[in-house]
Image (cartoon, rainbow, N blue to C red; front, side):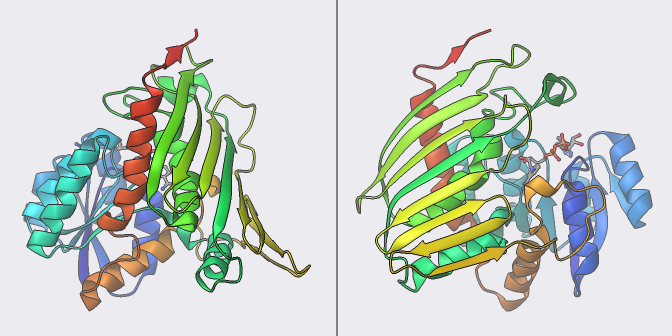
Length: 338
Ligand SMILES: NC(=O)c1ccc[n+]([C@@H]2O[C@H](COP(=O)([O-])OP(=O)(O)OC[C@H]3O[C@@H](n4cnc5c(N)ncnc54)[C@H](O)[C@@H]3O)[C@@H](O)[C@H]2O)c1
């Protein structure tokens, strides 16, 4: 039985706690939040001790696995502490704000023999799996070009109600590092090649209330010749369907929200629709993707079987490197319009 602790009792907490409760061989034994009321509420709900300092949770409960569900700037700090204490870490995206912090934690986890996983649950959606399988088995051929479009809505209250969103030091950016990171990860995973160059522009066009990007655009080239173009913004009127399109050697693939369709150039087509999640999350939002439980199960299995999780720290470094390169480029011409 794995003893599990969760640090951070905010919005995403429920996806982790509900998943843990549904999985055999794992038991939530403690929760933690610096906001005492949040920790107390979840502690009471799950019948476990509430802590206000992650170091106490990790030391006193003798946990095997810690889920890190806190603001971005704390990800590498808590992950590092847990790794040093010999505790396996499953951390929400992104791994860190600075690339070097993520690299250091991957190195340390390897040295200490600790499993270090990063949540990118969208890779576990049936839609993403269909496309990846048809790339891996050669039926689609190589990706020539990929395109990502994300038009979501983050009203001013999304930022005003948070003490870390919308800040360079605590969130590390805006629409790219927080929202588009999932679809950029999928496109980068589909292409699976080494990045050659990154061009990007980032702006804050309409959110006078916060500091960081609400709009991002870019063009990435890969050593094998593929290209990835993206356009992301969170100043749209609604959370519209994210679209990822691939033009490949032997066909085209489209992922649009919970549909995926592949049209091969020989005229055949295959498609899949993502059904409801494997479980019902109490209060979880569907546009996060429903598959936290699939990734969390894989992580717990990886710990038990002493193998790497499907999205290890090393694997997640690929999207971390890309996102950090987008910010490096985008910050050169960044403008806050209002
Ligand atoms: N995978 C996804 O689709 C998805 C969706 C939403 C959020 N997230 C990620 O989850 C993380 C948390 O996001 P959220 O929306 O739940 O944020 P949130 O602000 O709702 O919750 C974060 C919680 O962490 C607590 N906290 C801050 N510092 C702490 C510390 N040092 N020790 C203990 N607790 C601390 C805060 O008090 C807060 O309750 C972020 O990394 C975010 O990007 C992922």
